[in-house]
Length: 466
Image 1 (cartoon, rainbow, N blue to C red):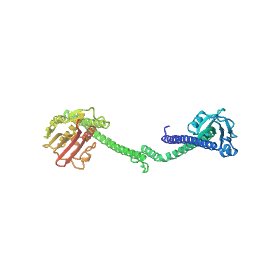
Image 2: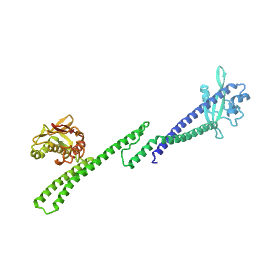
Image 3: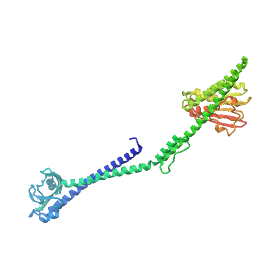
């Protein structure tokens, strides 16, 4: 049974049936006990009245007494016996002598009390029998001279219990049917919002836009939470779809430009015979464009791995201070070529748990980015400190700075500041996006602060190794 509606209706119906059946069982048991108590009380009362109506001189059952005891109306069997069990008198409807048990004799002898028991007659029928001693005074003492016995066949009680059971079973069946009907109607009402959400989801899935959202009901908290969660998912999908479209458009543009340049230069070179030095110039220009394509492809692969959660190959203890030293050595020639003072300010090892290659690329991208856009004669400084439970890496340059309107978009893919991020520098606008992805993969954060004319500072915070 796969339908949630069917499972809901069946569960509600079964629960109602089980609860109703348990209640019916309790009512039946209580009715049986109450009926037993009422029967015993009736038998004792009638037997007591009978014991007081007979005398030692007249141990017989008067006709008026049978009418008073309602032997015909109720079906009571009545008799009076002597202490030996010999019948002295009995009602007209009694066909078989009622036995006098030893337990009844003992109860009368011990405390002159009545005794109620269930006995089997010779014909196999069960009767409920109450025996009350008939007493008299002899020598200032109470003596038992007989027993007044009143019995009622158990079939009378069984018939009443059977009637009760029949009514209870009918009530259980009726309650189960009503529960099924109500569950069916209520499930239809309860799931109306789910049906509407399903139709909306189908429309969204078959449509060409992700802008439509599910209706959020105000009176159904569970369905409302589901609709809100689905709408949040749609928001993320729409955002991801838009990002993907922009990414594909930007990547296509970035790939098309160098390919167009390569094709144009080669076509020009092939139009006529040229000297060897001109062919050399074409090959050198082609090599630059191929290097640009190679770097762009590597960056795209890095972002793809990051999106797939594979940006960290392994985790190990990494000294960020030593890592900055290696980056300085790797970029020293590039900084010297631009007459930029590249320095590292570290006082002690700062250890984090991460991928050394990925973290080195973070530092390398930020430092290379700072060198690329810092004018000659300025400086770039790498600084590493431990603050609280975090390792803090800052890359600061004294370049022209970045306008405040560009700062929120710096880590977006393919984003370039109009002048400072011009294509002539060779970048594709992916370096900072890669930095952010790698830092987030390490559980850290990256931020930027810049003042036009005073330089820019990138700050990376990573959890210290515990």
